[in-house]
Amino acid sequence: MYLYLTLRLLVSAPLINYSQNKRGKIYNCETGRSPCSEISLPEPNHAVNMSLGLSMAKQQSDQSNQKQSKIVVCGPTIPRNCETITTYNGMCFQLRETLSPIGEGQPPKLEDCPISGTDIVFLIDGSGSVSDDDFRRMKEFMIKLIKQFQGRNTLFAVMQYSSVFEIHMDFNDYKTRGSSWESLINGISQQKRWTHTPTAIRKVVRELFVPSSGSRPKAVKVLVVITDGQTVGDSTPMSVVVREAEDKGIIRYAIGVQHKY
Image (cartoon, rainbow, N blue to C red):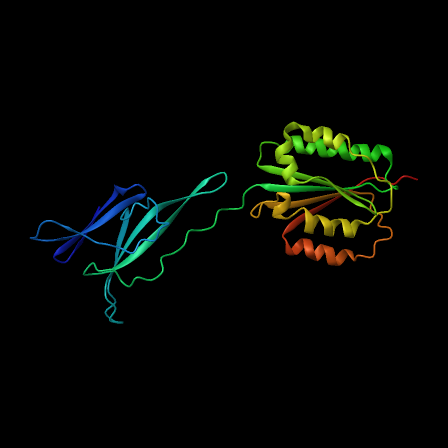
């Protein structure tokens, strides 16, 4: 590719590989002179295989503002390996009409990887107001939902609460258990105590949606609370823990079960 300028050509070789991870060169070719001379640009370390010169354009001078013409040279194929995909970013440099770089400024950084995967916590009510049949249905529901989402870059964790709180499986456990997570859920015994829902939500936010429990920083975070809706004996305000969850960007769903009369 080339751009014709007065008494010179700007020539690019965007597909030439000149080192293990560097691709693309540009040259100043003056009419009547040989050979062309390479133009050096301040490429940062992350400008990997950028195909420099694959795109070039000339910005015309503005006589009213006495602005000089500028040349823009771009490399649009810098890869970034994310968890499930590879994204591509571009980088551009400005040259004077004499083909000397304009300043050495700080080249742009690559964009962050997009949000990847989903982390889901099941928070199940094991208080005494939940019937044995409803507690069994909770476990069946969790197993069915996990199976539907397997193979979709989704991790799961399970906590049971009443007036005591028990993490049965965090995200690290889910990743290492293979298929044994199902027998673990089937084996959960109901606590049958009071119902402290706000405190349980706070513990999920602070103890499960954290890297040490295997939660991924860029994953979508989802909390599914399965309860009979009766909070008994909990002094923690629901409004406060809801705000904590919102501050962490946690999407929340509540699923109701029948009371035991």
